[in-house]
Length: 69
Image 1: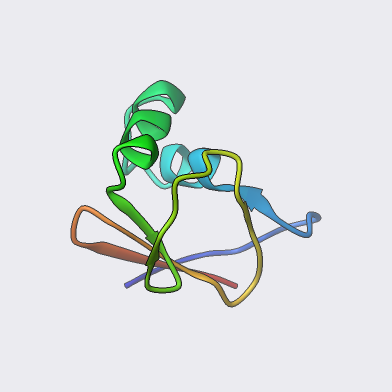
Image 2 (image 1 turned 135 degrees about the vertical axis):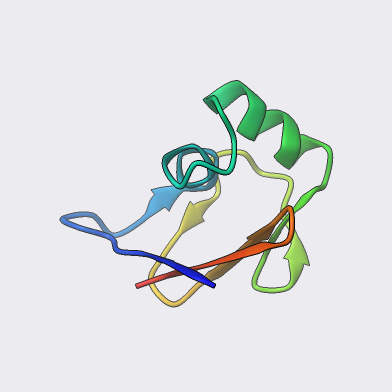
């Protein structure tokens, strides 16, 4: 499990989180993975590319889990 620290913001967009954490090589690849239903937020499939991820939420993709702190 990895952690992502929000710094100076209330949220991070889901596609940006996947890109910043290195789970996808580009924003386009992140958006495609989300659209294909491969990403979960708090245990549920999330299809919104610009979904706002806030503190304490958990994102799962490709066998990896990220907790936002």
